[in-house]
Image (tube, rainbow, N blue to C red; front, side, top):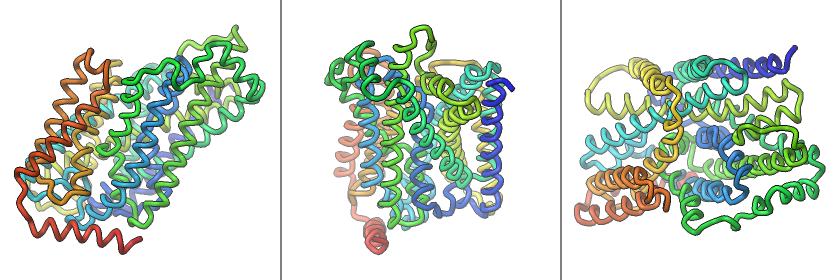
Length: 494
């Protein structure tokens, strides 16, 4: 049996497992709340790993190791910024968002929360935020499909289009069948695979390169600056990298996990699990890259054609082909977990935030669930059309979309949860200013090369939302009561 056959068997077992989870979750969906938010029944471990797996995508196993392999630990500032941002998100957003979305008319999406929270300009705000999600995430899903096609092309020699169809087909099937629960459960499994892989590869690799001392000597022989966070860093470069953490407050596919956890009491456990998972995974990714530097320095006859494949290459060098296939499954898990999460959020924006807001339908829960499934297929088809012609600019859109969501939604989420006087008009103008600033700044090479567009976008959106809210604020008894009720719920569940 050839190495490729062993690896393909591991991938097939993994893909079959994802479909079986989708079938299991299918039986648990009774209404739209179940299909889009899992009935708010997620435990802390599933919530934490689901948030982590849907967040990290192929960047964790390919992008970050590749960047550190080429440039060293100076590329680690982004990982530090993301870890801090994720921790702050769990600490400040998770408990309040879980409570507030429950008391505010059981909001099951971010746009519906805006609608129910502000009770002013609500339809406009809900539709615009739904459209932003729909547009950005359709391209986001496309980027994941591109990554899936490239993965099968590079790993098994299949055509790009075959790989794209396989990845898209499996993700669509389990998301279509099981909705949010299928996505959350598969994310949990995928997150576990990623976590174990990022421990096993560097631990085994350190023995291959002769232990800690010899490994460090080999890295220094290539470039002593590879082990420094500061040697080649610039102030604006570090700020831009750390600023990625700001994006967490506005990422719909991540913060929706906070809304689905069983109770605010379990947020602390979920935070510890999620941040622990994240720190170990990021450290594992960095060590994998550095050990790869040492290995290829020690074996000059072995060639690495693509630095982003360093994790895959090390897995194939160290392990039996079947175990190496599980390492490949970890990369595929990173890709698929993000696609499925974004696909479901996009579907919910189409059904819950655009269709239901524009067309006042009296459809039954079953009909809404079926509409959600149809939306999953429609979004997938459109995303697949964008991805069919392999285009690197789609992958480049990921950082742009991260900034767009972070600047458009992040300040509004924070103010909605912590400031009673924020208004729907203020939120609307803040969202627009954040989105426009990111668009203009991000499309100017001079500005975006100097500072990541999320920084000016987030700051200006925050300022505009506060100023406009102060001008337009009028006391609203219902908003005050809901705000107090959310705080009471948090206290009760401590």
